Structure formats: structure tokens, C-alpha cells
Length: 221
Ligand SMILES: Nc1nc2c(ncn2[C@@H]2O[C@H](COP(=O)(O)OP(=O)(O)OP(=O)(O)O)[C@@H](O)[C@H]2O)c(=O)[nH]1
Ligand SMILES: [Mg+2]
Image (cartoon, rainbow, N blue to C red):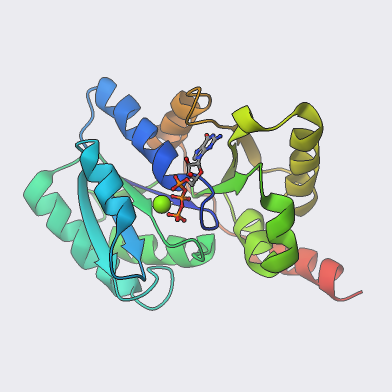
């Protein structure tokens, strides 16, 4: 069983894209469950997933990358016992950062060593809005990109080449070597590639020193 987690700020296209990925995995004969994590009362994402027939569990009361890390293990154990999926897709809150997610999943993997494997953490970068977010929630968005194992630039159907080049440059400046993919829930671009990464990719060991250096360069000047 694989646990495949994504990150990306509010509205970056996570739910819409994960529904397409779940359909793709189903077509490949795989059983998929999703975990959605919301701090609000009504979980819209859960409803969206369920409308598409995707088995969905919810973790609420805080973000799984920090406050409720431990809950992830319980929830995954429950899904395993009751549903036996091949892949668990995890959509955390928009403020989750990859390192926290990785730690949460690593704890769960430790408890289920021969059963569970962690997929790369994929950060969703909204091609339509990333520059605006950089003004408002810069540190968070930068962390999401710096700590990513792979980056998916989303909504590419809605932007021109000039904007796309700007977004690519922004991602590359923060994380020069990261695997970069392009996605659209509207055209289906990137869905197969993301499914492949989730099934076959390995979560990269996070190099804290290197990332810290990049932060220092940006903010220490
Ligand atoms: N043009 C375009 N719009 C998209 C695409 N994917 C999502 N959207 C739109 O972007 C908005 C947010 O999409 P969601 O999938 O809800 O994003 P999210 O990251 O799950 O949002 P939160 O769960 O609130 O953080 C919706 O209005 C979608 O219709 C895409 O590939 N292309
Ligand atoms: Mg969502």
C-alpha cells in the first residue's frame, strides 16, 4: 500500500486533480482511498471526492503536518483494515509543508513497515496565482516548493507561455533540481505522470542544511 501526499496552497487545484488521478489509478486496476484534512467544519473536499465515488476519510481538528500528526497513523491503519486500498491519496490543508507530511507518514510507515511505502511529496503550484501568493504568503509557498520531491504546476490550460515561463523560473530558483511537471484537470495533462510518480517514485530524503542555506540567501541579505 502506498501513501501519496500532495501540498499546495488553498485553491491550487489539489482536489480537482486528485480526482483525475484516482480515476487513472482505478483504470489501472488499483483500489484508491483518499484522506482529506481540513480545519473547517464542513469538509467540501470530502464531498467532492465522494461524488466521484472515491472512498474518503477525513481528519479534522488540525493540520496533519503538525498538530494531528499522530491521527494519520490511526486513520491509515483503519483504512487498511477496512478497505485494503493500493494507494491512499492524502490532501492536507493548504498550509501543510512537505517536511511535516513526510515526518507524519514516516511514523506511520515505521508502524506498518512491510505494508506501507511513502511516495514522493508533490507540491502543487498554481500557475494562475503563484505570483500573488508570493506577495501574501511568501514564506509558506517557498517552503512548500523548497521541500518538495516533485512540483506540479497546475492549471496550465489557463495561462500563456510567458506566464508559464515566469512560474517555471520561480520554481527553479527555489529548487533547481526538482522534478517539474505540468498539470491541468481540464485537459488531463500530467495526470498519468503524477500517477506514475505516486506508484513508483521514492520520497527523497530531505536535506535540511541545503534548504536552510537557500533560505538564508533569500532572507539574510
Ligand atoms: N483552469 C483550471 N482551473 C482549475 C484547474 N484545477 C482546478 N481549477 C479550479 O481552481 C479552483 C480550486 O480547485 P480545487 O481543486 O478546489 O483546489 P484545492 O487545492 O483542492 O483547494 P482547497 O482544498 O480549498 O485548498 C476551482 O475553482 C477549480 O475549478 C485546472 O486544471 N484548470
Ligand atoms: Mg481541496
